[in-house]
Image 1: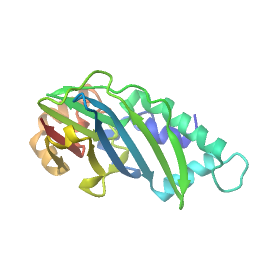
Image 2: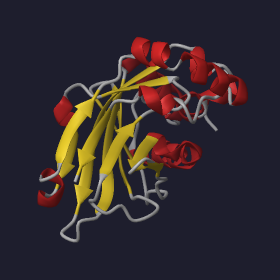
Image 3: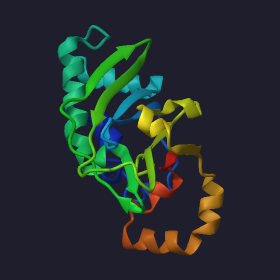
Length: 213
């Protein structure tokens, strides 16, 4: 696997205590939560735009013909590499359905593009089990290793799609990391020693959209 892909998708391999580290990769994200007429969540659509420094490192790793850009076949390789790598991390997706964590199915493909010096990744994931529009649900995108900072520039970048879903009460929640640490210090310390990657507890820090239907 390419070094940049290891950084993107498997930071815990490079840094076992990544849960205590600052992010090294920055990405602006957009997430669309889609519901259909049968009152079910059907898919989550993602667009990720990475910072120029990391994007340049991806060009260096995947630019086989050394033309200082990413051609269609090289972009396809980038997408396939990320598709295979992020399965272990549930494609950075956090979903809860009335308090229960829900996994996502592997997407059909991840489309990569390179524009204005930045790498873009676009893909959709489907919940691995049905999620009816009933009760409380949360959706977000977060790197459980805390190595990549996924930022939603505006609340509108967490967008419900579908009349039924828009009819539910919803709000965007942006946790304050200092408050999360202060309020959960004991449990986070125990979680770190039991699971240094922090893959279970780190979702407490994730920006998310909450629904009550």
